[in-house]
Image (tube, rainbow, N blue to C red; front, side, top):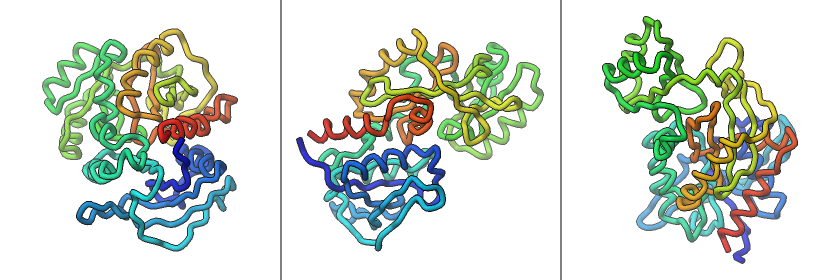
Length: 315
C-alpha cells in the first residue's frame, strides 16, 4: 500500500473555523495523529502554469484547544502534485470560483488523491445530484420561471424556496399557500441569482428534525438529528438548530443502500445527506459536515474511518 506522508488541505483560512463543530479540523487532526505532515492553503493560492499546478502553502500543526488551535509555518510555493493527498474542503457557495478550483485540481488527480474527486464534485451539485433519486426525495422543481413556481405552490400548498447553489441555510424561505409575499420573493431571487431556483414540497416532519447522515466510501458511518429553533424552518446548526443523537430508520437504511453504489462510482469518499421524515433533500459532496457532532454523541470516529478509506484508495 502506498504510504501517505504529505497532505495538503484546501480550505477557508484555519484562523476562522469553529473547532467545536468543524469537520475539516477533525479530518486534519486525525491525519496529524497518523503522522502525516499537513500543509494549509486557501483556494486563491492555486496557480496553474503551463502543465503544472502550484500552491503557496504553509506547514500546519493543529491542537484541539479553543483559541489556540493552529500554528502555521513559513509560506512556500510547491508543486501540488508532490502531495500524496489533497483535501478539497473550502465551503461553498458553489460558484465559478469553486468550479475553477475543481478544474485545476483535476490536473493532479488521481496520482495525487483529491478527496472528493474534483471532476465528480463539479458534475454533482448537491441539489441537482439528488434528483437522480427522485423517488427518494420530496416533490421538487428547478426553474427560474415565476409562473412555474406559482403553479407548483398551488399544487403543493406550502413550499420551501432556496438558491440552487447556496449553502448553510442561507436564503431558504418557507412560503405558505396563503403567503402574499411570493411575488416579491421571486423578484428578489431574480435580482440576486442568475441561476434557476429550487422549490420543494414543504415537509412538516422538519419540526422533528432534519437528519444529517454521513457515508464513507458509500457506506453508512454515522448520523445526527438537527432540530430547528422554534421560530425557524432551517435546522442548520449555525443558524440555531440543535443537534441530538439519533438512530437510522428502515427507510433511511434503504436510502443509504440505494445511493451507495452511485457514490462509490463517483469516488465520493465523504458524503453527507439530509433526510426529513422519509425523504432525502440533498446529497452534500463539497465539504460535508457533522463529523464532530456524531462523535460527541457517542457515534463512530468518522475521521478515522475516512482516513482508513483514503489509505485503501491510495493503495
